[in-house]
Image (cartoon, rainbow, N blue to C red; front, side):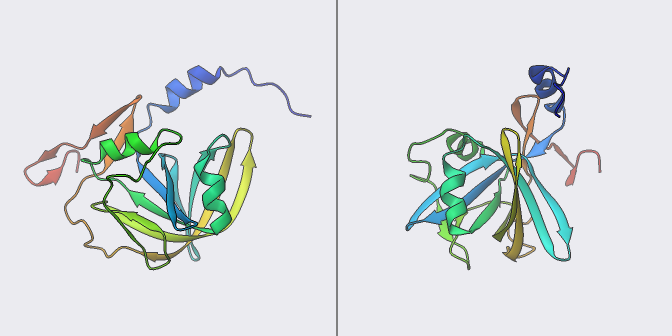
Length: 173
């Protein structure tokens, strides 16, 4: 039997917003058309085998389409790509229109000028109340110098942020 939580959903969202996260675009090619969505809940799971994970709301209209293909790309956005993140955060509409992209070795859409990309095959999917936890096996990835020197687009406390650079190094390093 599941017990009701005493944690207020809005208060939890506020607290979790104090954890900075990177921004990704999860993409797939469905019937020769690119599909995708903005995702900030992305992480590495395992190096052997190479697994990554992300969470997506059950109300997503893009994920069910991408799932049918069984593979997807993860595009880690750079600090100047906030407009792309905002475009892909909304349901419907021509998300890929005007976005510079190519196909990955596995046939997944890759957003140009990202910090890195991964080509994944669907490994597992788990239901978690109002979300799906998706695990992908990494089959290919961008070269180490794909976008050398770039900084990530971050999301913190409900807004986009950037790392500040000082004397050629990232602040805090």
